[in-house]
Image 1 (cartoon, rainbow, N blue to C red):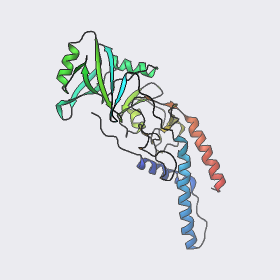
Image 2 (cartoon, rainbow, N blue to C red):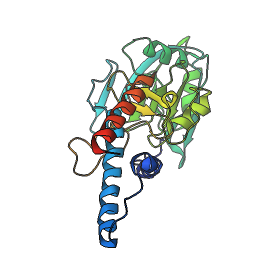
Image 3 (cartoon, rainbow, N blue to C red):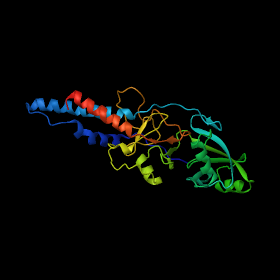
Image 4 (spheres, rainbow, N blue to C red):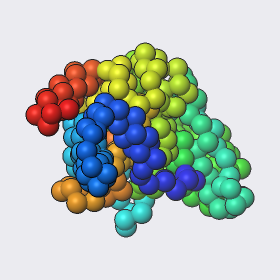
Length: 287
């Protein structure tokens, strides 16, 4: 039911590099024309390297974390899991885009329902998968839905006070992003975090577009990835570009696990650290 994630953040990274240019490049001294060309090329290379150094503290380390105890990986494409919930479930179902018989998707998780409460329990440390938008409902009380929404709804209505649900999620499915104030959103892997924050009403105080503000900087305490709200997206570790000749995973090579919520914490100290390293590097290079 979910859309295919779009890879990389090349444009955002390019905008960021261009925004940094004035911070690193001073006016070229007067020299012969051919000397000015060579000096300009060297300066431009230094701009790129300085920008890369500024971004480097944001790189996290991808790690394959184990599935919750109620989940199983089927092949390499999807995860199947079971949850038992009391009514009201608090979920909205919909037929697949191709129509009835092609799958029953979770269209919405309603605030205050028991599906939403399960997510909160997971955020508090419970070992379990949770239901989120984009998951597919495959069976109710061990009876297959056969891909029909009407059948799924009937099976749920005919159940007692509790319902056992079997659902599946693409292995590279949506990411549950949790902001420092507890607000959360189910995010496609290409979604810019600042837009998600605006959607759920999380206000970090970040107003810039180039990330050069400590209020924009957040961190995943598990992977140590630093996320800058106007630039980064959920779903990749690292979530920004790397140079093609740099060691380590490049965007798309390390996927954030969709069975682990991305819990962000404020990290202005990481911004301060990057500024200090930038200033020291500029001093050593004579800028």
